[in-house]
Image 1 (cartoon, rainbow, N blue to C red):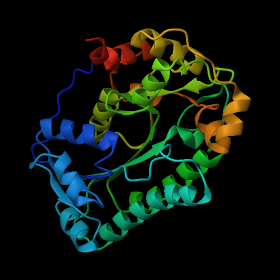
Image 2 (cartoon, rainbow, N blue to C red; image 1 turned 90 degrees about the vertical axis):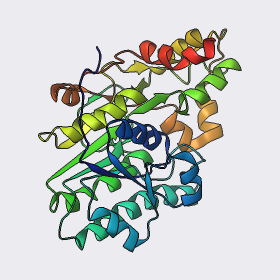
Image 3 (cartoon, rainbow, N blue to C red; image 1 turned 180 degrees about the vertical axis):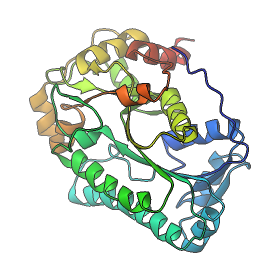
Image 4 (cartoon, helix red, strand yellow; image 1 turned 60 degrees about the vertical axis):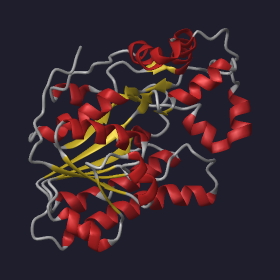
Length: 316
């Protein structure tokens, strides 16, 4: 399937937090192609200015700057938050992961509270980690939060949403799966491991990976932004999740790597503790049904399609 829709956003102004991240970079590029007026919010203005074209307005989190930008903003997309997987989960890092998300949402809500004309739409990021450790259950958006640190983070994150829903015309929460792309997300790291023959089965290998290609994620966000009937929570995952043992085989085959060495579960738990148990040995089987019923057409249905597309540059 292909995503055959065209969106005209000439009059829309979109404010994005977390703009310098992997998803934010791709989303901004797509919005500029749709003729959107884009405002990027960041703590590090110097590095962000180097990354984005002059067409993007860049501001910091200072209240006056944020309020001024929000006064003429139509859509807010909140992607802000400390990376989940960049560092081990010690107490300090866990606090940073949670607080970075809560503070961003609270600052946005505080800034919007003083406006006479508020944005019409908030798209709030979350993740399928909300469902916690569920070995085989398929999770729709109606599933309750699970257990574990990731579930705690996402649950606290999403509890910020009702405050916006009371004031804005429309609020959409996107629970994002494992994002696949050439220049970010998990693929570059998996490719390095595969080339070292360390990209084999992890633990039992039966843990589910609910993935989505960065292309489909970006255009699913734009699709929901453009559909006035879209509201509530959406799993941002491809229609066909895959177990880790099969996913690792596809990575190895697509990258031309040789036989891969498996990683025993006890070793992951011993070396990485809770971090490894939740991110590597566990997974979620999330359903894309609601997004499909909304009318979105995926370009990448299978993980093999997505991975072959992403790794194609490495076959030159």
